[in-house]
Image (cartoon, rainbow, N blue to C red):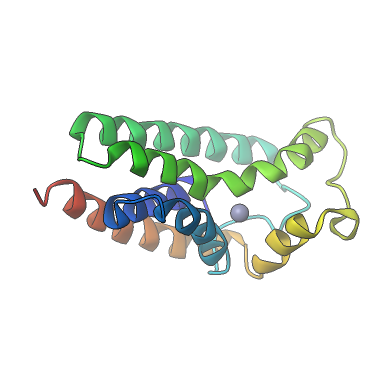
Length: 154
Ligand SMILES: [Zn+2]
């Protein structure tokens, strides 16, 4: 899933749970969302690196905007929500080494030679193809409605 979908889901968990139990729940939510069909290029190869970089930049900007909205709207547990947003998106940092390899024109490291946590993350994403964008758009709309409801309920 795109980082913004992970981050919004994490923020919702933080705002709804309102205690530190939200932290591991937000982290675990990453794997639940990744198990849904979603947008992607099936792991090892990015057919269009420029498109990938644009989508990544948009994702990062949206995540920064999410934290800005949380801090400006300032609900009681906004710091927990921001931390949960980060934790929910954080497992994708394990792909940074592959991203660096691809930027250098090399292929991603063979998944079978990776740590068990990386293999689990890879295999839970059984469907990541461009058509998965439909699920991503539906999720971001639904999650935004829930987030706005939580932000304006008091
Ligand atoms: Zn992931």
